[in-house]
Image (cartoon, rainbow, N blue to C red; front, side, top):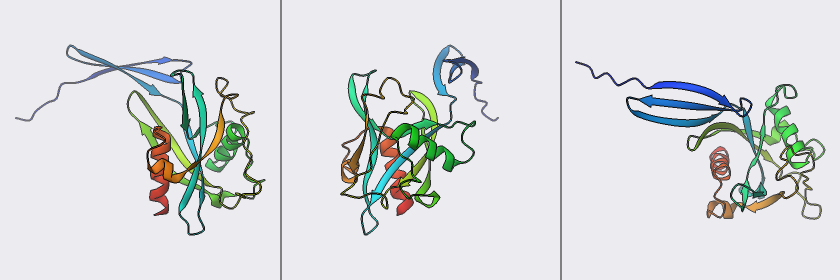
Length: 195
């Protein structure tokens, strides 16, 4: 006789303008609710390499996390806008312009400087997925004239004025100085891509 697992009952209700689903699960007397994002996100990991092609640094968004009262640093995260974005290149370029004030074409970068690294997903406390792209700023970086970032176009009204794009030494990421899951996952994908 083959074991038949009990059936889990699942219902879904949308919240926050349909950006999230509350998934209610029940099995006999046990009940659980999960929050699932329905938005298509991208995570962008700008980085620089050393002359011998090692990862030298990455850039992250340092912001005041009003939910926790702490300062945090994460990757640049934006949503895919099907009305504006025809290709992943369009999405990365638009997101960098809106969230970091950087036009990569003006910096002399192109599609060959953008790398699809993979998907970063979370399962607890919120289920979400975001495609992660790395942008190699090595050819645009110049110690005499650093890349100027601006948050003036950002859609993040709560932290636009109190946030900045910061350069993080890759050794700091490897040492665990930055604990955000997007930085850790994106950096791991970046290392696996280039090794």
